[in-house]
Image (cartoon, rainbow, N blue to C red; front, side):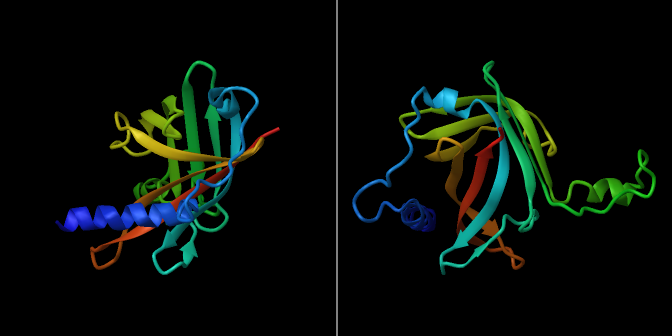
Length: 182
């Protein structure tokens, strides 16, 4: 019962975030070619955001307001994504970090590569990581609802949860915005 209620709340939050509560979907950019062709190439991270039910927003946890990143899609159906928090501590020795330095290198860094597919009817990009910064990521299916802003900008947006310090989960709407590299 509680899971069903949480699902309904997340769906309503997603509808609000998508701007669909007024009865219609927002006007979205329509590329001249295929959706697949639209995504091919290299993209640079513009911003990450979590929006909470009270309306306040924060940058994606762990990456901060100045996150840097790249996203690439190839004609062969492969992709790579890297997102990083700038200013991570440098290692005292360039190629031989201490154990704590090596462990801290993962803080503020997300990276994975694999295959991709697009479900146009659902407006979802699917990432299937084969390599990743996290050993738990390869073999998973990462669904990214996409929204095309214009020829050179799009964002992924979806509903999720964020674990709080007290162990509870709160609903969030996450958004990751990308701009085409030229």
